[in-house]
Image 1 (tube, helix red, strand yellow):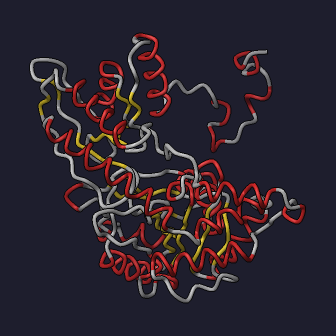
Image 2 (image 1 turned 30 degrees about the horizontal axis):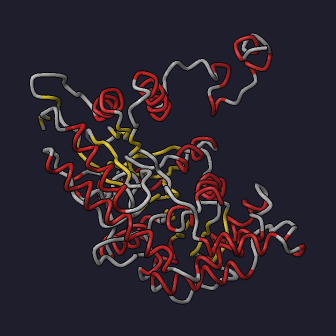
Length: 417
């Protein structure tokens, strides 16, 4: 039977309200990333002989370091690593604590009580509302941003309050704009720096304000830091946990997906306040049985070798330089971020004497449809598109070729800003 045939059975009537209830699957709205997927497929079909340049991919374009891969193979062959990991192995926790000290200068983290591994950051964000949110409680999220914690807040009966990230405020949230009644009901404040999609970086001064605000309003801070070690042009990697008092109010989530090219490996960790780590560990223990021990040991090897990330960051920095220069020559106002592999650029208003763009999405669709360049639109706080420097290219010569191809394709129109 097809999905449509099953919609006429009792199954259609028993879905939970949190995912749509009896109307689940009948929504005709198309999710942004599904629109991009469809547009890419249509462009490939219309222009089968033209290379599609994918600047929208939010994951690394290369494999993990050979040393990490070799460590996985070595550990996977050991019979003692075959069993359940539950809430993690001591070797990984110790490596994570040392990594925080070596890369972020975060001292005094107890690997036994203040760190627990996670099967990537996304599951950790999905589980955290179960630790804190009761019906009617509020989680504060920034937009544009990553919605997982907010989605699960709603799943458990909570509410989401969004704070816009604006260019005028350097894409940092204005904490003073949060209404007093929202702050009073809030349990969680979600932050993500360097930020997806804006590429913005936090400052020690900003994190100090966050700690002060969180203490005053008794709100837990969840800092999602998968890009924290990918910084450029002299900016040192910054951890929320390096802020005085941060451990009193929150936790930080780290992932090896972006910083070690280990996206599919699904390994990260939660660090910070020991009571929060304990509560999260209890919820986690009822959701999964831990990541494969061999993967944890390979990840520990990676954490002990942060030079791997430094080499990855050098590549992204070089690509950012080239992409920013190319876009600015075309009339854009692009500024190289200090961290992450995302370049967040204001969309043009239209083409001189031609098509008008009423949104970032309209411009993004034009790029895919007419120029076979894929980006991701963000219209939550202005008309922007997100380029990613994780495009496919082997070596500097190939990188230069891809950037030049973008310039060539966009040079036959004059954009209006």
